[in-house]
Length: 359
Image (cartoon, rainbow, N blue to C red; front, top):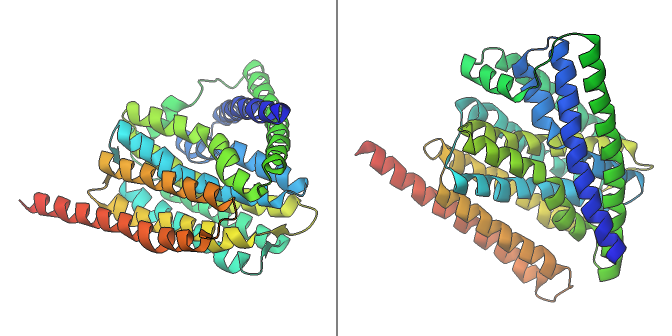
């Protein structure tokens, strides 16, 4: 048990360091190659924070721990919206850009909904995994094309986040070395984290899905927490929201897509995850619609409501692991009681905001 915990803690630490080095290395090489800062920020930097999720899910899929891979992706999406967005909003109210609301938010919802027909038969085949990956390519291409018209302020924000590099051999070797070391650390960290998580699941006699939805999902989402909170504190409040939305799109289209491609067989989609956790992911994506529409910002009250929802969700996941007889009742209360209640609170806030705006 102690060794398993040490593997999880050590794996998470190595993953965080590896992800940071990967982003810095890839960003530096992109700068040397004279790729536009905006494009680097929208691709390498935004998706780089999800590198731990990708590494862990690929490792889990390759080792045959499909439930861990699915749980990690879905759990990270829940954590991103309810915790990352919640904490960032409590620290400082967040703003939502028109582009994010009109474009990226719909992609997040569409990617989540796409898992319904894909996971209906209880698995994600290689063909379906290829389809998810292709959808990511389409999204990135559309993102780059539509972002070419971005204003100067947005370009400057991304420029400030990137390393300063000049196109010479010394800098190229430096950033390439960071890239390689980052990849190696991601592989090692994901292996340790996966092995430790599987051992914990066996010790407590709970499913790998539960471990993936909780411990692994929280650990691999730490980069999003740090990135969004720091962006909010620095006044880049729209980037804080964009980081969450972009990461959720990446988790579905890339993490699950590639994980299903590298496995020895199709990636099994657990019935429990399809019946409960996927609807939760879709539900919180729908919640973001009125949430982001309210004055184009995420208030501190919204942040508190989101965090409260995560506490309830995690409590249900842990409680369900005990195979309690009241599991179906709790599941119904969560899906058809608590989520609608949260939506109602946000609708009331929207009406109050609209009334104040007219006054």
